Image 1 (cartoon, rainbow, N blue to C red):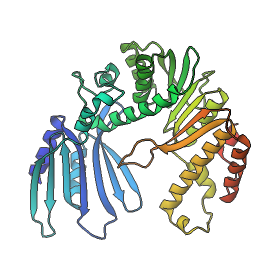
Image 2: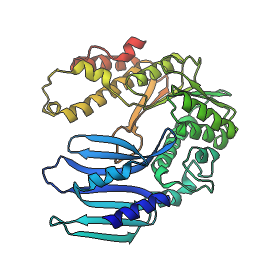
Image 3: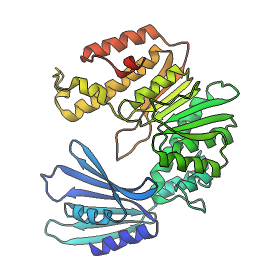
Image 4: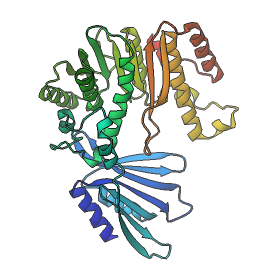
Length: 378
């Protein structure tokens, strides 16, 4: 184990760590099935994200650099197999039921990092972009930082989706975009750069974020990159007043903030609304304590997932009621989360608003939903 941990520590020090998985629980009756570890950046600082996968739920905890190795050591005792992936190797540490240990190493194709590099010619965000370096996705030589591989994949998938949606419509001379809940701005910077440099659109874009330190950071990066049409404003989604908007974006806005953003988009006459819904508490609170005939809804984990689908379907139908052609699909696959659904809404004259309204009411009636938050907003 000490040798395995030394290899792990070296991979972190050399910036070659990709991910680590604990599998095969030592106790068969254990509810904890796996632990997944990957590097993440929180508030500009490196952390390590642990996803504890139980039979019916996932629990995610983030640990700073100084604490995560001790946390990993305590978790390893609960599993028989620990597998470390670096950019060059796959290292496996096994412990038998009798306590016999074995360490094996083999060359790896660097399945996460190398895959990104191998496909770099087809990717829409080039690793030598200055904003990616300033955000810590790539280094000064334009090489991907391994722990940011998942984020880099997400950026490119996002650009692939938005590229098609934007290119399919005709726009005014200037496209006005608002990104609600822009966070550290990974996707905001990527979209602005792609639209202005690759597609040659004239863009005026605002990232709306409540955390002052992130607004300051993002405005500084926008200045360093000479992104003159991009700025960031400190505000809640509900309180932001930005006027007419062509494209409204809200990715993982928590609780009812997704609905606040959708309402803002409709009211501002946005031609395109893009959301990645996060929380679904408003509907779940109404249904707490209610029983349902379906045997599927007997189980808490399925009930949770089902009413996430109901909530997002109501959001889509509400948008159709206001003249938007909608689509719901998987944004990007991830072994660590199922919160990866994207809702897109394109303004269209061919939407049957009355039919959408009937279906909206039928769905509420079927599950005893008194109201959807969007109805109170508008």
